[in-house]
Image 1 (cartoon, rainbow, N blue to C red):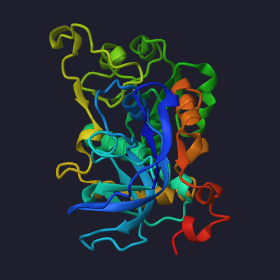
Image 2 (image 1 turned 30 degrees about the vertical axis):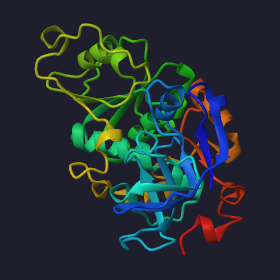
Image 3 (image 1 turned 135 degrees about the vertical axis):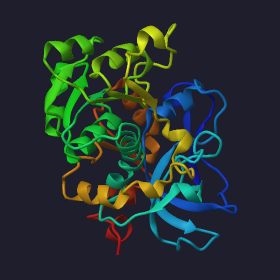
Image 4 (image 1 turned 120 degrees about the vertical axis):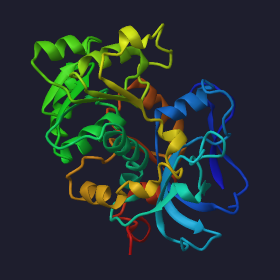
Length: 343
C-alpha cells in the first residue's frame, strides 16, 4: 500500500509518500480502506517530534470502507468513519491506503456525503459534541462562549451549540474573521486580546459555559469569564503546550466555577466514552441539509501532504482541511458515484 511516513521528526517536508506492506487486522481490529482523512493539529505535534516517539504513519481519523472485519460485525464495503484508538501514536495511522483500527473506534455510517465531506466530520464533531454535552452539560437557552472559534474544532462547537438551541458567543484573534463566525451561528463575536473577562463584563454578557480551544495560555482568563457557578471545559492547546505557571486553585479558580478537561485522544472509543453515544448519523444528516456547516474549506491530494501541513501550521485555512487518497475520490461524487455515495 501507499503510505505517508515521517522520515524523521521535523517540518512538513519530512512527510514522505512510500510503499509499506499491507496491514492485517488482529482480533478486535478492523481493516479499513481509507478514502479520505481529516487534518488535525495533533498530527503536526507528532510529525515534529514534540510528542516524543510516535508511529511511523501519522493520522488520527479517516473515512472509508471496511476491507476486512475478522469478527464479522461489519461486512466488506460498509462505509465507516474511524478515529483515534491509538492511530498515529501507538499504531500506524490513517495517512495511508489501508489502516487497522480497534473495532471500538470504527463506526458504520449512513450518508450521501462524498468522501472529502465525510472526512471533515469525525474527530472535530465527536470531540465538540462530547465536550458540549458531556463536560459542559449545555442546555438550550444557555449562553456558551467558544474560545478559539475559527479553528475547525471551534467551528464544530459553534455549529453544534447553535443547533442545540444555545446562544453562542465566539472569539477570534482577527476582526476580519467575525463574519465567518456569524454565518455559522454566533450571535456575538469578540476579538480575543487575552482579556475576555473584562470584555464580557463591559458588554453585560453572562456566560453560562465556556469551551476553551486555546488552552493553558488563557486558562486564568477563561475561568474569570464565566458567571458564578459557570462551567469551563478545556479541550485544545492552540495557544501552545506550556503549562500554566504556578496555577493555584485558591487564587485562580473562582469559587463555584467548574473546570474540566476533555482529551478525546485518550478516551473516545473506551467503555466509558463509547463512540456509539455520539449521534454520527444525525450529525451527518444535518451536514447534508446544510444545518451544520461542516464541509472542508480545502481538499488536498495524497501527494500534496507537505503543502497541506504547511497550510495547517500557517493558520490560514480557517476551517477543516482534508486529504483524499486517490484522484478518483478527490474528484468527488459527480465522477465516482459508486465510491463516494452509499448504494
